[in-house]
View: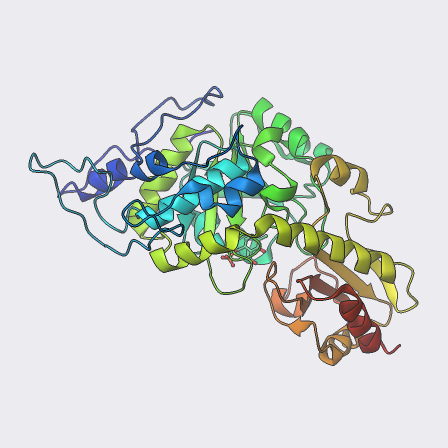
Length: 431
Ligand SMILES: Cc1ncc(COP(=O)(O)O)c(C=O)c1O
């Protein structure tokens, strides 16, 4: 694999400064890096963190206490929002306190990054203004020309970018059924494939991809593995522990969980060079998350575990209730024993199968759209992972070329009463 290096400062040196302030170290080996911890960046926020716990804190504790950062000045349990866009230089012209300019990063952003790093068991995290900004940064950070493998069925917005825009940036794409390790293996071009991208469970069919197998295949061919783990969240799956190199989140979804922030994150396992390239691009292109959104996200993360576990219980109850229902042709949910990825999901997802499921209606597309129109508690809206339950006729939003069957409704379970949610679908189906 090969990520870009940005050794050339621009004319006034600003780019080099932004890179340094983001903790960027320059130019390393091009060959796959050995697994080792990344050098710690100068991080005054990390230094303030303290969770008082007799042993190592569990992930729930880290999330609930927002990584242990409080307000040192007042003792406030909730940290302040750092809104400064620029920072004072030291008298000797250095920026020793770790901050230079708000386009590189920000203390509130770093607080959230540190929590996500701990939740995923990673080495570092970068937050962006959306999941798409985070994902496209990974692809733009590859050294072109690069061959990249991605799933045929995945979040459609990113799939479209990979089909339409990525080739303009020197990326040659191969789309495969990523649920099949044999298909992934066959698509590899050793020495040329730089990145294998998977999403599991993947939108909107909830196909499960074997992360450990995909990591072996990618690494054997000299590539890195990136996992879009938006739906699983670190509550259920930790891709880095299974061999992945990068984890992507649309933090708009479960991580924030309240449908009031658009954000994205890349968590890096060990790949200093990938971090360098992505941090540099974020600083140059200006894709960093704003401090207010970061503060909202930190608040959302505090309840992540309880939300995701409850949403998983609800989704399983709904899937079981409608499995075999006369109006339903197929339920797509990895928690059902009949789902082809069930055994793998049971190994790879711990404590639940996630809050997302889809249903295919026997009576076809028009009936699916009409059923969604009759739902009252389920809100007809795109997105997922919030506290309110959403239903979406996915092929309407994905459009031509999408592998989504037209008779499919996608459900994002929220935190409402399970019986209310089931009754609402029943009445919408005409029972
Ligand atoms: C699985 C997945 N990845 C990435 C994205 C893109 O995230 P965002 O909408 O925050 O840009 C989405 C958005 O729906 C998604 O569902």
